[in-house]
Amino acid sequence: MGKRAQDRVRAKKPARKAAAEKKPVKKILRKEVPIIRTTGKSDPRAVYRKPETSQMWQRLGSIKISGKDECIDAFVRIMREVENGSYALQPGEQDKGKYVLVHEQERQGSMFVHVVPKEAYKIFQEMRRQMPDSFLGFSVLCGRVAGRPLRVSCFAVPTSEITRAIIGRK
Image (cartoon, rainbow, N blue to C red; front, side, top):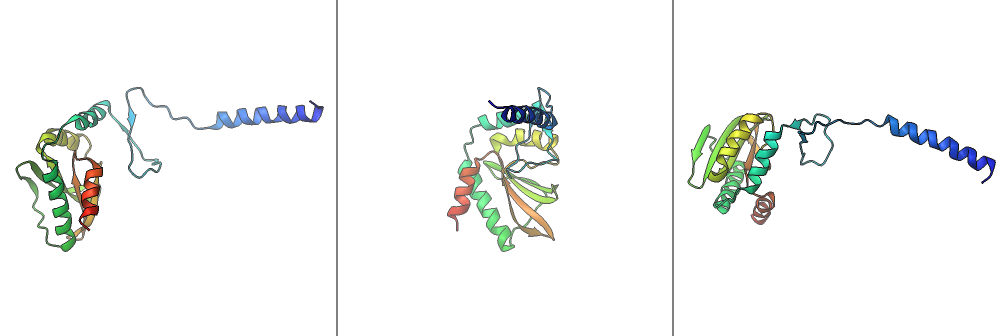
């Protein structure tokens, strides 16, 4: 290797090392897990879930929902009624047999109607208390009621099944 080539190699090494040292490094405590955003974009405001919240998501994933079809049908029916402007928003909770309808007046700047299967209701209440400013799963912005956005969510039901039901209704 000639003298010029050796000089180029020497010049590159410190530059690479300096660039590697300048990279920002996020330190994450062992027991914290980053929140997964559905947008796929990096969010500088991302917060970290506490370990007990992560355990709730794991418990939620292990629950077997028996009235899944009824929940999905209710979700699609409510979406259709909101789009047509015929949905009557009633504050509070309504027991509908295999699921509970939970109406929230304020979450992330929107009103929410949650369709919650009975098997997941206890976890839903815990998550609602521990994460008051977060989305609690898949939701769809359906329209506006009294000038405010209204979202409908179907808690603890796989997003793929909800999406198939939404696409299938059109």
